[in-house]
Image 1 (cartoon, rainbow, N blue to C red):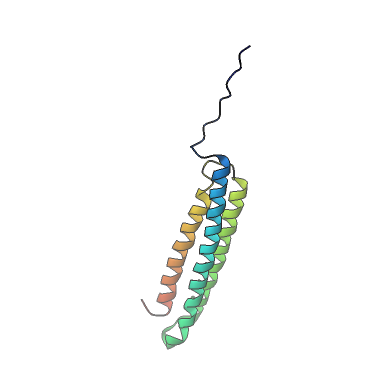
Image 2 (cartoon, rainbow, N blue to C red):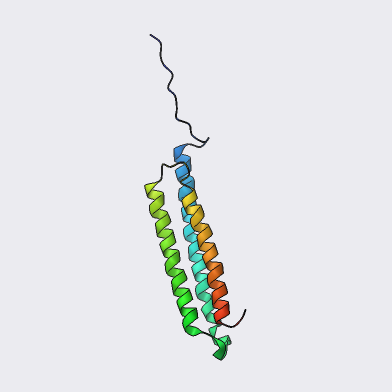
Length: 120
């Protein structure tokens, strides 16, 4: 009787456990990035007294609220996708894409806020 060699399914050089650890670390980095970005966008409202009558106060308020809630949604959606697809080969892409969305949203929200303050 000969023993048959077990054929391992092809992994891309990284074990499933290591991929899921990387994805969890990236999700944590996404949550921290989102917190810092929300704080930066929110603190732009401190500049409101310096712009006088040229400010669009409701636009600044709306931009801040929309950005904060959309960032919370991106972080929660990324976490849910991470749980559902934790064994997938590219599970680290979910939080990585979330980081990109959070940073891009912060840039857009900052630009809109500067326009509402008459700075740009």
